Image 1 (spheres, rainbow, N blue to C red):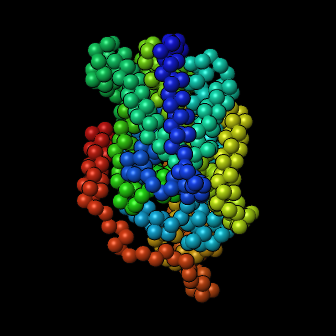
Image 2 (cartoon, rainbow, N blue to C red):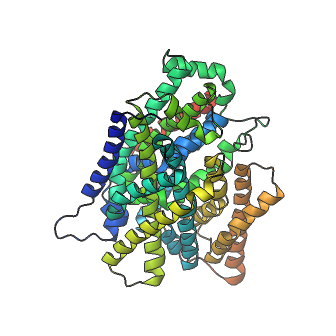
Image 3 (spheres, rainbow, N blue to C red):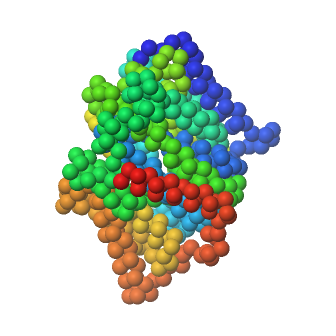
Length: 525
């Protein structure tokens, strides 16, 4: 990729801006020492627009820009179901889940499991999430972003990984969630505007210079098979998106697990000024979600129509940057990709540090730790987590064709169990701690067994089946304990219906989002 002086200036200026803003917003008032609430929950001061922007900036990482564009090249618009269903899921989380979390005053999702069940569940899930963030989430963001970075600067993927990590560390470790969230507001602007530039140019290229509207029309003409939201069984990628499962099956498990019970996501919501602010923030994020396929999926389809000369699907987006984006705009387009990478990296590092510090260090290793010590441990864990991810990223992911699908499948091994634990814990008072522990232990073995017994079954269908099996285990075990052992849950969550009341702004905007999603599926069925 040929970068001009202006491109380099824009890209380097963007990196400098993020570092400076991150450090600046991390300052504390004279005489105030940063405590755990400041570091892990941004002093509970985030307004709705910052929450929504931070959620999207943290969620849209290189796995979407590069991984989902690659899946757009291979599968088509159907892969955007992850985005459209996420918009609907955000509404459910805002209305039914977050009011309970905020009422309970928790810092982490494992902490909620301790309140509802016991410390065994808390610790086991804390260890799992730490491993997931380091070895799946951090590694994929680093590797996919480094693929593009190595093309631009002509350096090895490993050095690109190191460079990304250094920039992320430079502003996020010191400031904690406050630095992450406020820099995300800037990054989501770069992310969307820069992404739209690439989309515009890709569609314009498809039309031969006749403009993006004509380019979109030509995509429908040249690649109609790429615009099926519901894939038929004869589609070669049916196993990735198995028909109506995207509406009524396992995709709900993936989305509810990610948006409703994931520390990496929920932590921003827990940092809100109030419940109204957080609900508006999630609606704002849902609206932004509806735009994301235009930024990350359509370019992949355009690359297919342009007969991109690539050896693997995940090279589609870097190919567009290299061949279509002109000198002078490459810096902006590439800054968008880096915005997605840096926001996700900093968020994952902070969430890993939060879980370790609150659920492992303070809960088991040093209960008497001071606020200052908790902040120091949080910073240290952030650094260690990114160093580990740097070391394993390339060896772990170098041979994968569609990394977005790799992520979905292997997180899908545990997502059904997480959803069962939280949904029953939130809304079924008879669920017992022992039943929850059995469900947590059985989650991965059940997923492996189902995969072995039904090897040709799409992984989203496998997730749905595992969810049903684990739900049955939870119900049967809990009822057996209730009846035969006289064990009744003492930690059931107490609430009344008034807790779930939402204002007219939330209700009307939610209806608008539901209408838009329904229209998309009806039009592109």
